[in-house]
Amino acid sequence: MKIQKIVLPLAVVAFMIWALMEQASEQPKLWVQIIGVALFFIAMARLMQKTPSNKPKESLVIRTDRQAIEEEQAEEMYSITDETKK
Image 1 (tube, rainbow, N blue to C red):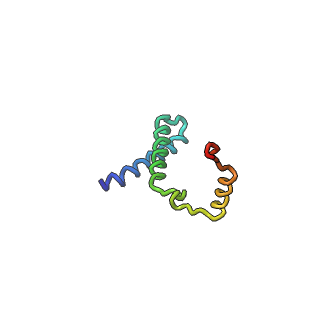
Image 2: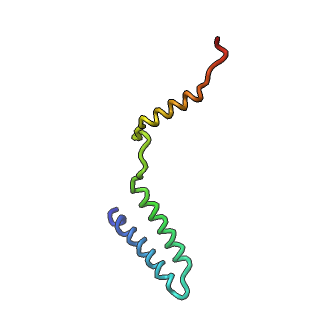
Image 3: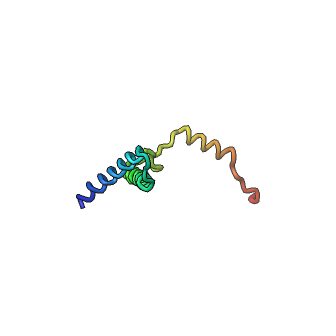
């Protein structure tokens, strides 16, 4: 299991380097380049899953007094009244 965690990423990087070197040849092999690009995107997607987001969670967002006052003013401007009750 530990060997796979080391060998597989090294093999992916080696294949991506091979794809870059293949680009410089006179007749590059298209399948090598396609697989190299696909492996690059898969590796980047896996890396993005590991890094945390900078977006704050909604439960941690603190409302300022200004936001609360603006919301109260908006509610006062657009209040709904029930005219059926007298």
